[in-house]
Image (tube, rainbow, N blue to C red; front, side, top):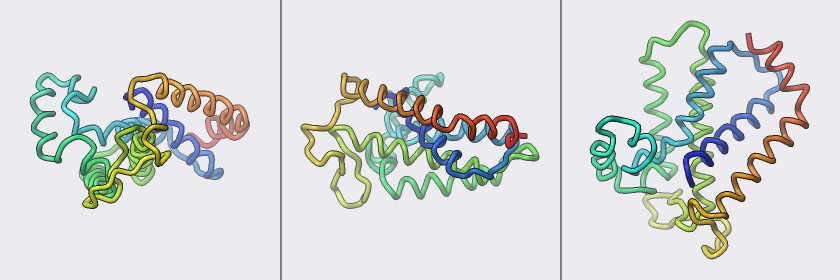
Length: 190
């Protein structure tokens, strides 16, 4: 999947989780940092791909991306597995504990938002022909639907349809939960 599809899927998943917790209050800082962490989590598994947008936006990103790609076993290997989720979760938790975060930022929710983004990435990549090695070190790539012929290829009309379905879902979901969103924005984000 392309980065824009992963971005939308991560934001969609975060929105569902936030609206499922009706009494959660948070600071504006927490909301903004969590949204950023969610978007980073949504593309983090592709750190193992030297041509990923993350590496293209750094001055020597292509070179560093190639080194990281080799260290992590190539694209859709460890970073696209449960082991990768656990490792990233642990590293991000350590990073959040070590960083001088502004007072009032709920690092637990920021971590959750990052992990939601990561899981959404793996779920979305499960819809592609390549599938995802969820249970690494088992050399099996899982995909949905199980028949590869029914899965999408990155950058094709199939992915465009998935993007459009996510967008329509977001519009419908936000419309159905308008009052909860309004309350969240007006009363629970301080």
